[in-house]
Image 1 (cartoon, rainbow over the protein chains, first blue to last red):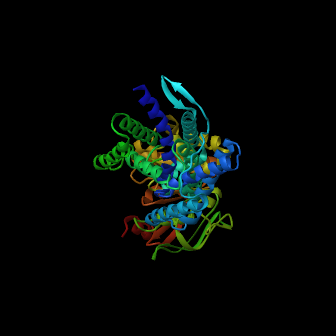
Image 2 (image 1 turned 90 degrees about the horizontal axis):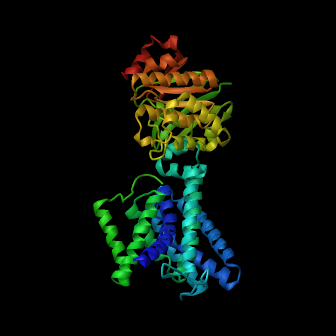
Image 3 (image 1 turned 90 degrees about the vertical axis):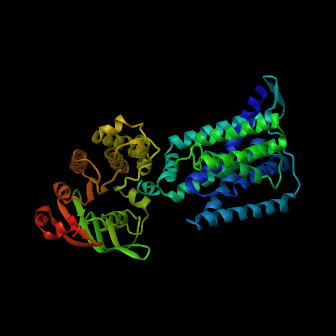
Length: 283
Length: 234
C-alpha cells in the first residue's frame, strides 16, 4: 500500500507537469494544441543531443531543452495560431499536422529507433522499504517545484494575473490595457517550457522515441476533459487521480489496462459532468 | 484644442454601420453625458474611443490621434473605461480585479489603490470576495475601481446607473463628481436616464440611431423635445 502511495505520488507529479502546459493554452487561448506532445519529444531529444551526444553538463541539457520549448511555443503562436486567430478547428488540425511533420523531422535527424536517456541523477534510494530511483525522485521534486513557481507566477505577478484575465473576459482584458496577443504569446512560451522540461523527465522515465509525443498528449487531453477548463489546482488534482489510478491498476490488475481506466474515466465524466470536475471559466 | 476631439466618426460591425459621422469634443475637467435610447450607439461610441471597433474618422486625445492605436496603447495614454456589463473577471477576487487594472500603471499601484479604497470603502472591506458573488452595485464599484487603477485622465463610463438601486446611483454620481473635483479626471458617461445625466453632467449630447441629434448645456437642453425623444425612444 505504501509503495502504491509512493509510486502514485512520483507518477502524479510528472503527470501534473506534463498536463499543466496543455491546460494553460486551453484555458488562455481556448485552443487544443494537438502538437503539445512535440514539446516533450523535442525537449527529450535536445537534452539527449546536448548532454549525451555533446557531453555537456546535464543541467545545461535541461536548460537548452527549456529554451527550445519556449522558442517552439512562441514560433507556433506567431506562425500558426495568430494567423488562424478565431478558427479553433483550423488551429487544432494544423497543430496535429505539425506534430506529424515534426515527428518526421526527428526521424530524419535521429532515426526511428528508441534511445535510452541516461538518468539525470543516477542511483537508487529506499523510501519506506520501496526502491525509488533518484532519477524519478528528482524529476518529481523538480516537477512540484516548477508547478509551485508557476502557481506563484500566475497568482502574484501582473503578467500571471493578465493570463487569468485573458482566460475569463477578453473585453475586460482589453480595457485594462492588456495586449491579449502578447499574453497569449507568453502563455505559449511557458507552455513550451513546461512541456519540454517535462519531456526530459518523461523520456528519462520511459524512453526517447519519435513517437513519444502521443501518450503525453492523450494524458493531457484526459486531464483537461476530466478537470474541465480549469484551475491550476484542478489540473493537479486530476493529474493525481489519473496517476494514482494507473499505479493501482498496474499493481492490482494488469499493466495492459492502465490506459483503459483513464479512458473509462473520461467517458464517465463526459456523461455525468460534461464541463469536467472543476470546470469553470478560469485559469 | 479640446482634451478629447471626435471628428466624423463612423463605426462598423461587419457591414453594419453603427455610428454616422459623430463629432463631439470634451474639455479637460469636464463631465459630459451622451444620452439616447437603447441601440442609439452609445456603447459603440465609447468602445470606439478605446479602440474596440472598426472605425473611420478621427479621435484625438490632447491633440494626438488615437484612432489607429489598439486598446492597450490607448489605455496607456490615460483612458479608463467602465463598461455597461462590467466585464469583470468573475472568479478573481475584488483585489485581483483591481490589480489587473494596474497592468499598465504599475508605478501608481498603491496610490491608485488608496484612491479606490477612499472612494469605495466597501471594496476594501470585501477585497477577498470573488466578484461572481457580488451584487450589481458592488460590481459597478469594482468596474469603476478597475478603470481608476489604469491612472486615467479621461474616464469613460457606460450607463453607470443601469439596473442599480436609486441609492447606489446617487453614490456613483457622488464618486464621479469627486473624481472630477478632487482628482481632475475628465469624464464621459452614457445614459438612458436623462435625469441622472442632467444632475451630473455640464453638457449633453443626444445620440439617436448612431447620429448626434442635439448638443448643449443642461439648461439649453432641459426642455428640448429632442432630449425627451431620445430619452423615451420615440
